[in-house]
Length: 84
View 1 (tube, one colour):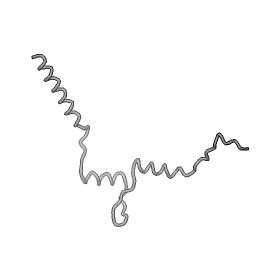
View 2: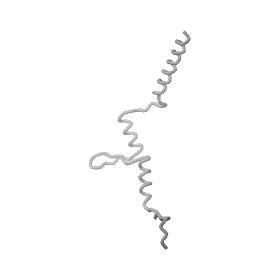
View 3: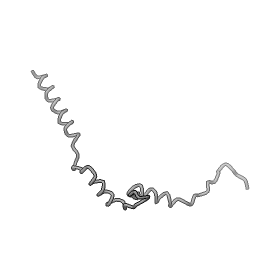
């Protein structure tokens, strides 16, 4: 009987874990409305060839800016090449 009870307890514990895994902190809205809201919030909608296209926003935009900033490259000096 004792083994049966412990097994039952383990099962219940496992189910609690599984149930908690699926839950997320806040409910997230899905669907088209969310996409539109995000587009308005994060990037400017602009038309390109008759189609609406979103500007790069957030991390991607920052990355692009960083890449554009790195136009001046340092000359790599070879340590082993000693010609004077």
